[in-house]
Length: 376
Ligand code: XIL
Picture 1 (tube, rainbow, N blue to C red):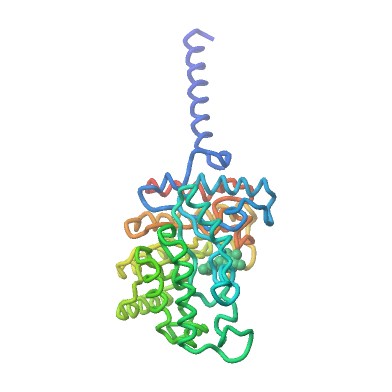
Picture 2 (picture 1 turned 120 degrees about the vertical axis):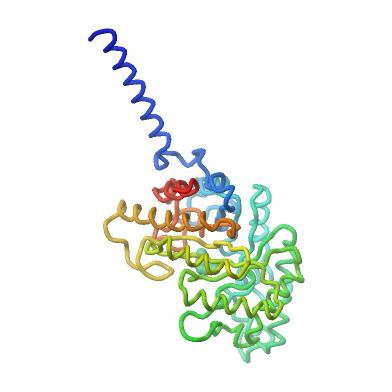
């Protein structure tokens, strides 16, 4: 080999080595969980990036995961997210399991708040009034185990006491609350679902809940939160509900769109949903995002065809479509919150619906989401 030839081979090798390094450094699936790429940084000019946390994460005590796994989950929360919401610990059943002022269990909720404040994360509260995960005594006369149902006045008073106790305790710390969750009916002509709240109090229970929360913390942002808003029919009901709340002068201040999706979700569907929601002129929060890789209802369904790699690819495409829509409408979106830190702890674990796998490693969907921040 002539000296010149030798030089060009050497240059080629250097160039190739450099290119290899760059490619390798940019490949997120090769990155360890402590990599420098963080969702919260990449989207800092668009919206906050949140995550629902469970009790193991907020207390550091192992539950269904090993202590090492919990430690890794905690590290991932701190690294990737700037906002948190408790997955279960502020629901009535858990925070107020027994009747009366002595019936509260604030320990786990306090641990959530402490975890968030000490890690400088924004806090959302979830949820004050819901038909699910609410003890039966709430709807009974005298809070008895059985017998007649409570009257409208009794239930309103119980709701007021509960909201004042919970919102008041975290006043100034929890800046945004899901006040009423999932009040809308699926299918049929009714706007509101036939929950005990609606049956006993009447349709103004939604407005009343917002009034009580506003009394308890006038500075808190009060959200109405529901699922299925990608569906035009459900959205129409949401618009009707919010219009009626505004007519009742209820202090509804933001829309929470849960966004429990399946891989069939498209950019167009989310783009249209956000375009419609924006007409309400309220800030939008994506509150419970996950995308199940299986076909079926909210909680799962059958496994995706084509094996794990095909499922990963479809999930990445679905997430890319969603985030392209979120980025397009970012001026109206305050936060995008994932419902769980990784696939292993997800309520839809079967559908592997999140950006991180059970070892807290980023999946191809993580990379696809990151790309959308740059308008790709
Ligand atoms: C789910 C939790 O993730 C589960 O751990 C629990 O068993 C049931 O509730 N909509 C909501 C959330 O508003 O509170 C639900 O969370 C998921 C659907």
